[in-house]
Image (cartoon, rainbow, N blue to C red; front, side):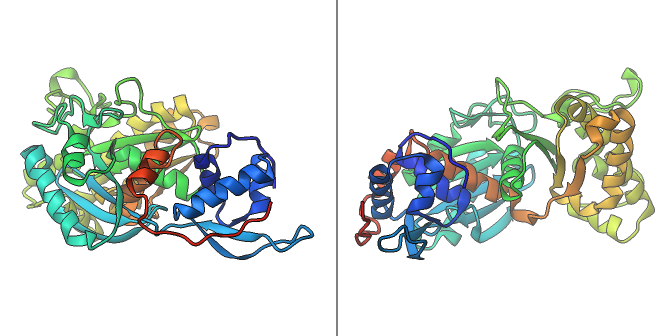
Length: 400
């Protein structure tokens, strides 16, 4: 294995197990560049905290065989809530971000934080059971001031501006809370689970969101609004003819390509649709008007994303959300305009596709971000102190 020197903090050694999977003591020494005694100390501390588990014998270095260890994914759980414009999904996830139990509910985000978050708490109670919770991750469809754990000037989240989401949950659960833009969370899940980088994640449902994951991290921007293409100006004709958006502006991409806009246009044609899922159903049934409007929405999105492709040169654009179920009807429109408006170099190896993670991409990303936070160098000591004694471990008998 390639050797790299890292700091000797317990969190750095744990990060190796999170990244590489099973490792022996010798593996950790070779990858980290740390001394044998330091590695022994770190492994002992992690084992006593229940964060790594011995899984058997590994290679021998002349003495007794070195034990191999793995990250203890079930040491605790993370509660996650992926809140969208018209509903949310909650999940209990292990420390690798895998949903163990989940459910979804319908509620309009513009009904306000107290109504929506109380619904989330009720849903958490339904699926939590007796699991030990180490953190909570909440995704919202608006710009997020990440360190403060609140949304700032959200276009469609009436009553949410600067509401202390993190504090609201902390007062009820007493654990760290991470608040993230929902599309950013999806970008993290897509990048980490596919072991890729330089990725744009588009969430297409009632509204439109975009998350950027480049050079191993989320691109949030100075105020948390980076990548919000849903409320940029669409390439859509004369100023006087621009359509109104829910955010109060005119001519936004979402006003032409969001699920709510497609519903508006279908109803204007005399086609009754209750929500975005009805639009998807019509497209799958071969409804001509629904297919035409979704393909046109794809063209609007293709125009919008083309500038991001030219500027950022991503390796992938991953589509998730309800409208992603329209599949090639939608993708063909995006592809058409995107390729027209970008250079051959920027799109030469670009992969445009729908998410393979299904409905749980958001909660998975939120769990991963939350675990990163509670187990990083600045937080892990407080996390372990808060949960000391939860699962005592037997000594592992490392030899120096």
